[in-house]
Image (cartoon, rainbow over the protein chains, first blue to last red):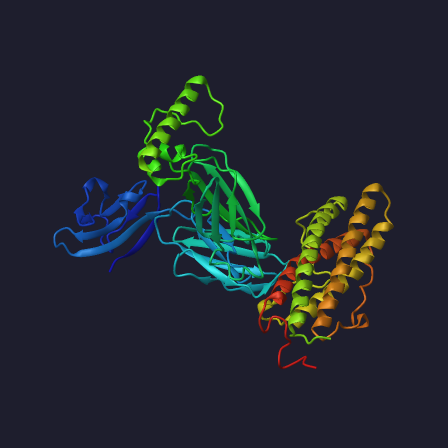
Length: 335
Length: 195
């Protein structure tokens, strides 16, 4: 049976055909395809400066009988670079989690080991099934000033590396973003938007560990955000929106006293209430209350109906008088 | 006097808790500012680890969410009484030092000491409401003997202020737990402490 052979990218690899002599006649294959004899040194297969593409199943056969003499799975890869480690408490005071990844892939299997020390006490970080590179710890005590030290070691067949993170309990507190952000126009208020949201569901006790919020909003047509910090409550009314402009709105959360702000929530869009364009007859109904006069008079679109008491130029005044006279005439017809 | 669970007692408790939360929030903010000033003034490294200082009550607690209201109040009261003595001692040590900058630090220390005293009184009121009454102060240990050198003094001061800042965070949460409506928020456990 073959076995797995790990080699570094750029290495020179020589494979012997099992116990065959150097001068034996042999045939090498990779993934079932014959390898050119130019790659052979006697019965040895020589691969210079291997690259990732040369990973595969290698086999060696005795020349005349085609008996399989040797096989191996060559895996070309790299030793691990220093891993990237992050620890965070999004469910304070219950516990925290750490997650990690490699900055560049190794192309071969890696094993990660994590150790967590609090003062002199070693704690167990339970690995999560999903996502894979993550583990969680339940706090044994809270409000401690003793630092945590987390060391992550990554090992593969070609080498080893590690990284260490040291932090205070409070420093890693970072809630998840607020959920269910909703923004609605306010009827009859062209400059207002009502925004509401909920505490992140992962935050276990918002009563004892209240969150404060940061709201940001801007019209889509501008790049500059407006910001509002809110020390309590899960709603806010924007009162300075530009009329008729679509807005983008996001909310972030933070524990009242400790830790850092969450990422921004999913963005929501909303446009403030705008007045429906009205037919001119409704505006012309200044003194008459008969419904018939309202429905019968339809001024052409270009005709301007002046407001009651408005001071306008002579042409427009003439239009007003004409409209008024026409309305009076129609009203008389329908009474 | 109304029973611990009467509606008026519950209202009074909530009122005291709300005021206590505001008081301790302001205290924490002042302690954080004082810490920054203290570190700078004393020429210390802000990230220096300070071993647990003898006589400084640790805010760290196991099974915090399982504590009864009375346990919370007693632990808080013991802590703030200890901090009252420790800060008074620090203030005395500061007054022995001369200089304008030190005087400002002394004033900031005095202000925090006042808030600590006020909060301790607040906790005593809450305990009276629990029909338990605060323990007499004679039961508490006095502050530890003074450290020998100036550097040890400074490190001890750093430890005191750091732990006080931690307590301020804990105390606000303790009072919020206490203020929660419903059974268990403040009642003593059935196995112990019943009169």
